[in-house]
Image (tube, rainbow, N blue to C red; front, side, top):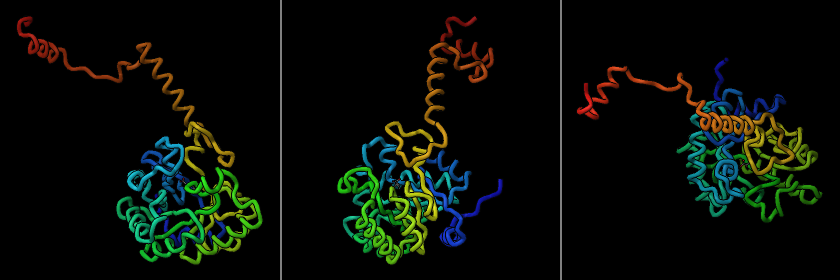
Length: 288
Ligand code: KIV
C-alpha cells in the first residue's frame, strides 16, 4: 500500500476548493485508529461521545479532560497521518477564555492533536478567538450540540424553522470570522446545510445534515453496530462488528465449556526430563 502523507490544513482546504468531499470519522482507541489510518480517512475526531460509546454514560456531560486526553493520545498512537481533533468536553471551555486555552493546549501538548472542536455559535466566539490566538486550530459545531441537549429539548433536528435556521447561518458566519478552521453541522436540514456551505470559505462537515456539505462525518460505533443502546436514523451501518464479536464470544464459551479450546497447537510443554526433575525437586522422597 502507498505510504500516506500527513494531512495538513492546506491539504484540507485544497480538497475543499477542488470540490473533493472530505472524510471524517470519530475514533476513540488505538486498534480502531490503526484501521482508520489504513482506510485513509482525512479527519479523525476523538469525540466526547466516548462518554456514551466507550464509558457507558447516558450523555456526554460526565466526560472529563483527563478522559479525553487518555483516549486522544491512544488514537494519535494509531493514526499519525490523519488530522486529529480533540473534542472539548463539557465545562472545559464554557467558564472562561483562560480555561478554554489551557484545556485546548492540553490536547495539543499531551495528546498530539492537530486541533480542537467546541460546541456553540456566537456565544462562544470569544473562546474561539482566544484559542486561535494561541495557535490552535478550532472546529465549530452547530445544530444538535449534545452538551446543550437539555436546552435543545432532546436529540432532534435543529433549524427547522426559518428564524432558528437564520440564527444558524449567522452563527456559522460568526465562527468563520472568529478564525474557525471548519464547522460541523449536526442534524440540520439539508437546505440549511446547503446555504451555510455555499456561503462558507471554510470546510463545512455534515453529520446527518445531507450531501451538500464539503465533507461527511459518521460515528464509528454507529457504522459498525458497536453501540448497544440505539443506532440513530442518520447513521449508515457499514458492517456488523458487534455481531461478529458476539458470535465469537458465544463460540468461545461453548468451546471452553466443551473442552474444545485450547487445542494442542495453542499451548506449550517442557521436555520429559525437565518435568521429571521438577517432580523430584517438588518431592525428593518420590525420586527413583
Ligand atoms: O462527540 C462527538 O462525537 C461529536 C459528534 C456527535 C459530532 O461531537
